[in-house]
Structures are given as C-alpha cells and as structure tokens.
Image (cartoon, rainbow, N blue to C red):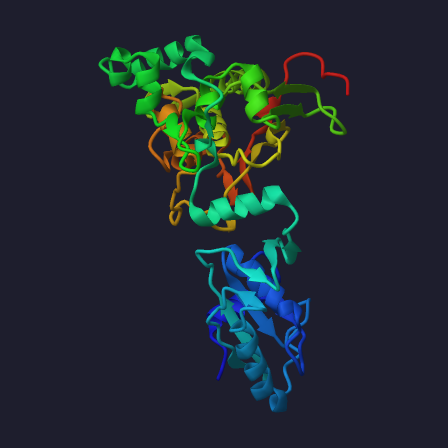
Length: 403
C-alpha cells in the first residue's frame, strides 16, 4: 500500500518529540517498546521501521515483514513487557519501491511502564524517569489532570498569610466591577470562594493551598512550601556574555508581577503607538500578558527557574509547563487549557489577566503594533513566548553603556 502524503510530511519533519525512526531491516528492535512507552506517556507519536536516523528510507526486507508483525503484536500485548498492554498495529507501506512498517502510538490516560520502568519522551530520545521522583510526579499529575497548586498545607492557616496582600487583591477587583462580591467578604470567605482553602482527600485535613501561599504568603512561608520558587529577570543588550541588569525574584505572585513589570518598563522604551485614534502603551500591554501568563500558568512542581529576558532584538519568557501539545502554537488553532485554575481565577478577578486564551490574542495584537511583527509561542516542557523587538525598543539615549 502506498504511503499517504500526510505520513510523508511527518517523515520530512525528521525525528523529534513525536517521531522516531528505526533502521530495523529484519527484526523489531527492543528499544521500540521503550519508545512506545515514552510516546504513550506524552503526546503519542509515530514510529517508522525501515528508515534510518537521518530520515533515509532503507526499507524492511519483504520476507521478514510477517514475522516482525507477529513478534510486535505479541510484545505489545504482553503485560510483562508493556503495562498496561496496548492495542497497536503495524501497517505496511511502500515508499519509492521500499517497504516500511508504521506504528501510530496514542497518548494514554494512564501511566505506561516498559518492563516495570517508566519512560518519558524528551525531544528525540526516550528517557527512563523511574528513579526521578519529581519527573514521575509530574507525569502522574499530567495524566490524572490534578493541579499541584491545590496541594493542601494543614500546618498553615489563613491567619499566617499576609492580610495586606489579600486587602490589595480585594481592592483590585474594582477594576472589573464596583460591586465585586469579594468587597463584602472577610479574608477567609474570600479564600474559600476562590478555592484557596481545601480539604486534603488523602488525610481529610483542611488547610490553605499552595496557590494561596504563592499568592498571599510571606516570603518565609513560600520558601518553606516551595523552596525552588523563583523568577529571573535579565537585561542583556550590551554585555552579551553575562547581563547588564538582573533581578532575582522569590516573593509572592502579586509582588513578583510588580517587579517583573517594573523591570520591563525600566529597560524597554515606550514607543508611541496608536490604537485607532487613541495613544496606548503597547509595551505595557505586552508585558502584562507575558508576565501574567508566566506566573499563572507555569508548572510549580518543577524546579526550572522561570525567566523574563530582554535582548537587543527580542523579549522572551520561559517557564516550566504541563504541556498539552508540542511545538509552535498557531493562533487560529490554539485551544487554551487552564494550568493552575485557582491562580488564573484570582488574576482574572483582580484585573491582571482576562478570559482564558485572550493572552495569546492580545500579545499578537500589541506586538504587531509595537514591533510590526508576530510573537512566537512554543509549547513543551518549557513554555516559551518570544516577542520580537525593534531597535528603538532597547535603544538608549546618551553614551552607550560599557560592556
């Protein structure tokens, strides 16, 4: 059977997060099953037997195909090899006169193990994460659709939080409406209404959540609950080997937002921009979107340090991420998914973010006004937002700083 054009397009992309080639001229390599495990634990993927690592079609021997299919079917249905067993099929295709075997691996709802080991996909390789507790936790959380920020801390109570921050959030709701319900609530009522006080289903104990601590906790409490919490703001235009300015931020999310905004405003010029007949700060609107997105949607279970970096020709953010797909996102096909619903909700209520999915649209809109170009959003374990900059955005007035 002749190979479909859409699979030729997949082959042309080369090996990557969801594509794997195996030379496999006469037998099914054992590492294929590790790849199946890794793909099923991620986004699914495509496996081609009879193609080498460079994407060159070598072909599978015609007289070995029936044997290879039989061995493969037995292996994927063997619980001692893959658990749970997977219903997968090898399909034979012809490419330029050569025969290849193709397997499509879906993403599964549960965690797959190969020979008792857990594999995850990392770029174009399969990684055994069995002994890495943090990565295994992230995998189970991704599969179970649980939210790390809902982790309950019964050892802390509402009175341990910073009530000045809760007051600030209460007042900020007026940006949305003068009669917001939070204005009439006390601090505990407000937190409960925002699902920031929950009951631990494992222990039955009630307490404030990690989201509550990140939003309204004092710095010492945040470090106690999440020692790796950090945002790194870097300005690197003149001293390219290191940086020209830096702010390492380890405080609550509201003040983290303030400091990241101030850092961006300090180092980016507010270029004159018109929206219709009104002058606006496209710079501030871009900063609002990329900063609130990084704070509200990052994967807080990961120790990866979130970054806001300003360079001569671009601004970009990076943060750990519970990815739902892989690669560059398209505005016309983007399907937003809430990564940390309680944090996202608070950000919306206090006016630091809008409805889910609006951040990407707004970033496109204001980047086109500010830079006359489109931003780039890249989904993966590390989520990237890249905003191109005109030279005028980072140009200085007066003597050039010494590198």
